[in-house]
Amino acid sequence: MFQVGEVSRRLGLNPQTLYFYERIGLIPSPQRTPAGYRLYSQADLERLAFIAHTKALGLSLDDIKELLMLQAGQQLSCRDVHDRLLKKVQHIDDTIAKLQTLREKLIPLLEQCQQGFEKDQTGAQCVVFQPHTLAALANP
Image 1: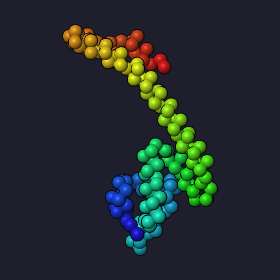
Image 2 (image 1 turned 180 degrees about the vertical axis):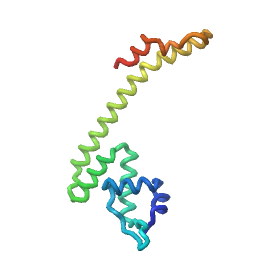
Image 3 (image 1 turned 60 degrees about the horizontal axis):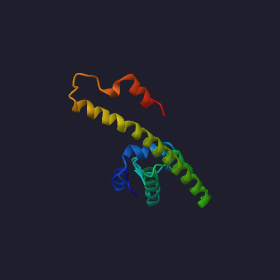
Image 4 (image 1 turned 135 degrees about the horizontal axis):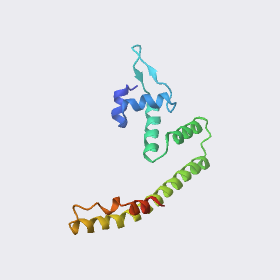
């Protein structure tokens, strides 16, 4: 059995994170010592490691909770996992596309800024803050 501090060190989690996961039902309430200290089992550590790993992969806590509920009900099929992971990959692809579009808009602004300071326009307002430039950046 492991106390909060040991679990935190082993998994690199803040103790408050453990309490939060317990509060929202991601982990069951651990056993307690007579003094009230939480005691985590090896199974609890494995569950917490799974949560930390899947969270690091970008799954939301709701996604993780759903996977854990499916797993607990012995209903975790490859199709269930596949569908959820596919949804996450599609979300990541959408985010990448949006970031790429933003990058494509920022590169010309960066070049304009560089031209401005190379021409020693220190007293002039940067082109980035001119209304027509901000409007172009805001439009997708």
